[in-house]
Length: 388
Image (cartoon, rainbow, N blue to C red):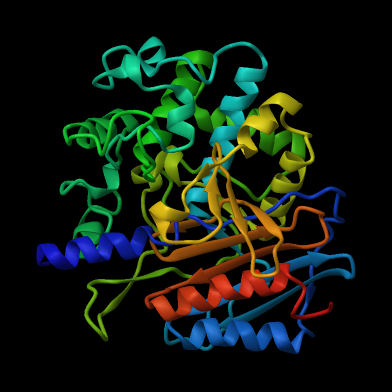
């Protein structure tokens, strides 16, 4: 693939890594969603699909109850609908789980947000004395994003040839850090997945266990998130799920490859996890209601750097593994969405706890579909659609 296409493809793949959610002040009921029955929501999902995706599933909770809708098909060219309440790869929503574990360790006095990376990972990061744990979590480290390195196959034919290869965090960090930093630590903001590989490595250094083991012990088991997994090197998505598809180039009409199965070690602590809408909602409700972090650490997590200029998205800020975004109705939304080969995840939760939204889209290959998904989350959180 020509280098200009490689760059555009990588940019497209990473464009949906971030999508906000917001604070819940009352614990929602976590019963199974009612399937079907919301014509407006279904029609909106059909627009997401029609504008350039294979399938879409939305799960909404508000003061009136809990319901879900779906559109499109489980497989490209197939006739079976998207499964009701599927499991899916949630991509960079993983970062909120990783950041939560780091902040729990801070609350336990086992490390500090101001600790230099060099203290925990000596010799790993050039100028590691000048990069702090905080800067990893809020993307102000300036460290090069590993996913942009020419030898990391995250798109197209290169990805297909390497889809079952196992990577280590150390290997991917080395590839990233052979490139110069974007800026000096603390002198700017740039989203870099390398930061979260390093955060995962620090968790292991502090605890003696992998970040996945700590997420499972500290978050998944206590909250009963039985459909959320840290898959490691397993290529499978457990349980019912739609198939994910990736265009093999940025050309119009490009071939769409089924990338449902791949070794997610290439995403690691930056985005490997698999979950369901209900589990994601339960996690963010518990997190933002203070059930996973002490008040001081939750305050740190939600304290943001203004990134509206860097991203071109007005009213957008980034905390520690969380985004804060001002919606069209003036309401703030806190969370983290994600992108993984074949899957895009959009998450929303209003600060007052009235509404929670999770939208999973498969085979997204056009900006028009992405824009429709973002607009739908905004609409649902602002109460201008569905059962308001």
